[in-house]
View 1 (tube, rainbow over the protein chains, first blue to last red):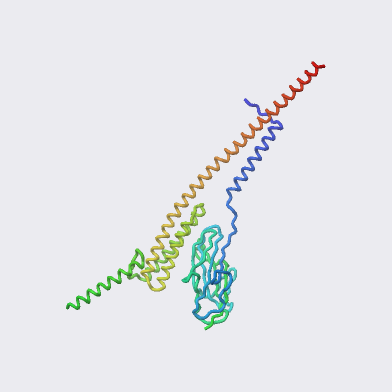
View 2 (cartoon, chains in turn blue, purple):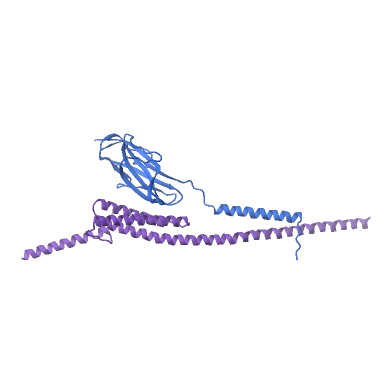
Length: 170
Length: 180
């Protein structure tokens, strides 16, 4: 039978063994942890040339307005999102971070987005096409991002929105 | 009389022609004379089925399943549902019912597939846990045993080295004695 003797050598050996076990444990735990993800949803509007410029500012009644409306999901899970396009006038119905605009809804787009997915909605002519049927100054096209809350089974306003200012001539 | 027969035959052929042309418009389904309330109910049922499907996909995703294909199917069901809403708004209840039925069918299928994906993901996670649970102690034991025997071997070698040094010193002392 081997007799165990606690000498300086065996003490060093035990210490190295414990340190190895601890380091290995920490490495395994760190490797098994999910990567931290910053949770947010985003909406963006691009001009007719698919760039963040050249947005329409002056249109005629009934003239098509082409824009690209994109949404991005960084919630780390699949999301059902809805974009509401609203038409307001003279800054009377600008949404806030918590409250959506009270302006009437012109169009609705819905989409299931996988985690980390970006999607651009398509209208009849590839970009989203909007036609305003009334002349006026300082019309606002408001693009609001909503998400579906599976607990309450209803759509909630995310607080994310974009807007375009337009003058519509007759 | 002959003219009447021809007129009846022509009307009959026209009816058949029109009816057969309307069939492909709704794919494999065809609904004629559908009430608006029936179409509305079908759309509501389809929307409800879609929400249930979404919840089941979220469940599968939480379990670690790859839900890429399921999300594609959810979007297909959603597009069909939106078409059903459009048809209903235009007063085409047959079309609305057809698209709503197709949407619900896809959503129901998603629920089944999400359940299977979830079960597979749970099984894979358990398997991984077992592999990690076994391999970590094995690696730790292997490292400890390796360190122990490595240290033992090193100690033995250094002891032998010291002993050889002692023998050499003794031999040198003996040599000096004989020469002296």
